[in-house]
Image 1 (cartoon, rainbow, N blue to C red):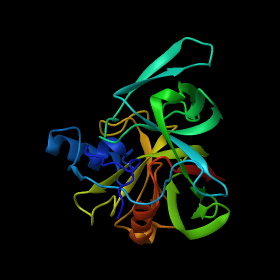
Image 2 (cartoon, rainbow, N blue to C red):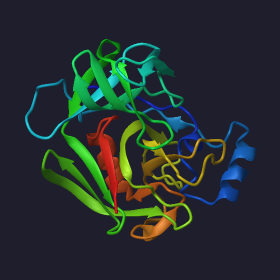
Image 3 (tube, rainbow, N blue to C red):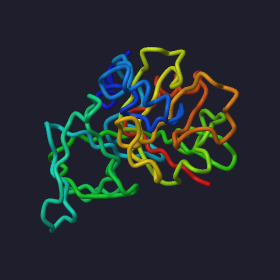
Image 4 (cartoon, rainbow, N blue to C red):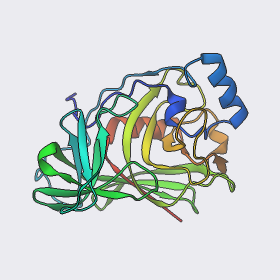
Length: 258
């Protein structure tokens, strides 16, 4: 299988990625104090396959993904404005920093940023990144408790999900995958794999030492699929998350509706 440069390994503690959505706050805190390193067991590196191609290789509905070339990138508030922030690469979980491109204007790209508030955008210079494309996207219907993966206009996989409870909802919006991790215990609460998302919980500003980042991940409680059961993350069956891990690139857009 060919290696995909947009699918890198995340090597940091899984609890720092997730909001704690698969367990309650007290159990997450116990795990943190017992491990002594902000939380939980290390995740296993994951190498990438499939999912993304160089621009112009196929037709249909496609999204552009910008992968940072160096160790940091400057984000601007506008094409004419001053620098707004510097973002480092790889990210905190060991994955190459990527952005979902919203507008391509030649020398400049407007991108969706993995920061609060959800939906934040900024401008980066095209020369600072490598561009690739994906025809895939994931749509989450909160009301129907269902996900659908599209390849262009064609649905290629669908299944049931669990979403956030009433007090810790899964926020609607447009996001993208920021990293892929494989839990050391694949029979644990996060299941076989977890994709980090570029969005954050609107309620939990931090959780178990992490920033309250959202994720789509597997589960060891399939009976909860189809209900509101998490602290904001989206849970899917282990067969579904394994399929996603094999077929979807970091940077793939994710739309949460309902």
